[in-house]
Image (cartoon, rainbow, N blue to C red; front, side):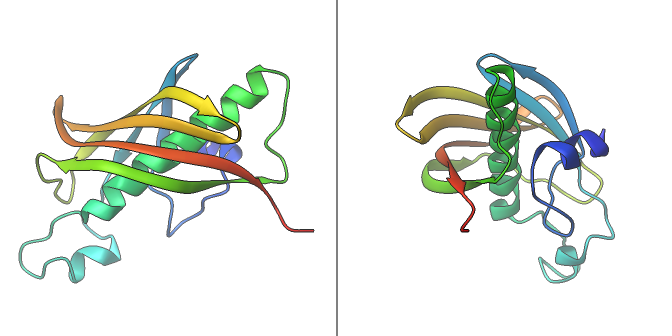
Length: 146
């Protein structure tokens, strides 16, 4: 549910690429997104042949990672209040298919390891059960400036 996403991470439309949190597990999370045909980026990417930009698919994975980190902190008795999830590494993004207007995707992240404040994860975006993106990345929870 969108309200659950909004209550968990600081991202807001028009730069919110999750519709729903489906599951949060000790090792990761799964979220969902349906890309609507009326989204403004389709008018320029590409006119007459709209394709969801790969960078936005990556962003949906990073946002799912932020959901996971926030929930993990809460489960451990902490809080992400006053902290922002910030992307600090992208590795091995592999695009294996395309996402079109109207397509629904499943976004899964898995936690690999934590080194100091850096949380290393993997992500997969699936359309119709098939991977369209795999990626490795790292997020850090950064204190907001005073």
